[in-house]
Picture 1 (spheres, rainbow, N blue to C red):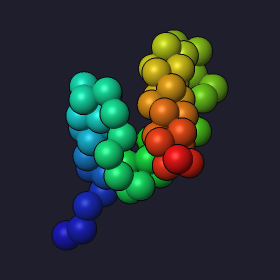
Picture 2: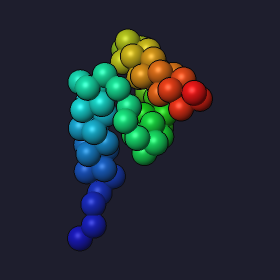
Picture 3: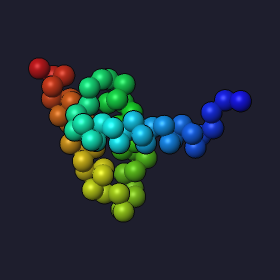
Picture 4: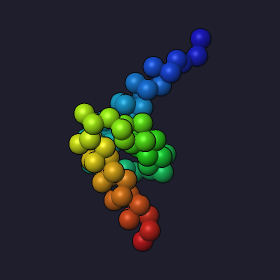
Length: 67
């Protein structure tokens, strides 16, 4: 009675939508979730704008962490 893969993907999608809405990654866990999501979407041409947005959020987080 565990969660299926579709349930996990739906949960991840909701968390990513929340990060996108906020416009900022606030934890390392969110960062790695976004990086994984970016890898999944990287070859989907229809989602190129989303990937670009997520990459910008990840890069901003990396820059803040580097300071």
